Length: 299
Image 1 (spheres, helix red, strand yellow):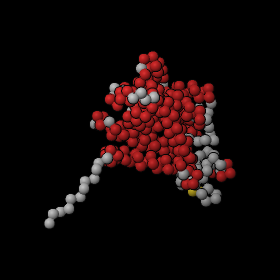
Image 2: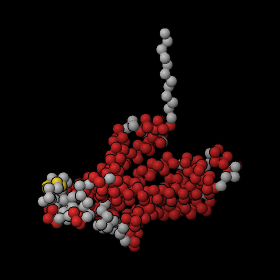
Image 3: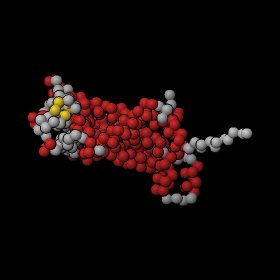
Image 4: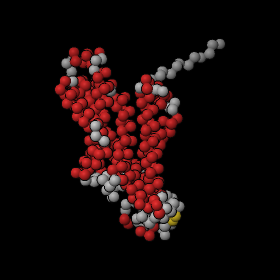
């Protein structure tokens, strides 16, 4: 009696991608951390023990309590409180909302603008390419933090202003990456066939050229999210980022900096750990995505 031969499951590109990505346990761990952090940020109003920026829930007598201390009404502050009596655990959870929101939002906006300009430079060439790439070179020649500080010095504090400043200093990286990828695809047969069919240029750029340039843009977008979070934290630490009413991790670190030498380490330490873990996790995911989407870069 012959054994039944089961049909072999077809290996799709998605399954191949999942198998290659899951082969790196560091990247999988980073992805798990990123998902947990994102869930904490989204569910902050429901899971945080306290709304740390609701004045009705604060008591100045609870200021600078050590981790594990309890308030007069029995609330346990597992990570301590800051100088205003705000629960540090709740502050970190709420701070993740601003930090991730600014990072993801600015990375997406910068990605759209930079990718569109990079595709246009590669496709049209000539003076258009020269003008765009000279602007990119000029942008990348200045330190990002310096340009962002100058922009915020004019616009002032605010979440939207921080997102605008980060977008203006980060779009050039997407433009250079998109142009490099599009130059490779520009000479492919499917582009020549689309041109022979006299398709509209916008359709050729965004329906044919852009999808084939997405892998490197996805990788740089992932890394740019971590970079944007770091830049926002730096700006907030320097006092030019988000206002005190809309806290981020960088602002939480700045609030406790003056108390470090007096032994109240937890006010800056725990937000710093949360920021470090978030950035490292995002970078681990982005670094392995680069290897998976471009096998030539595998070590």
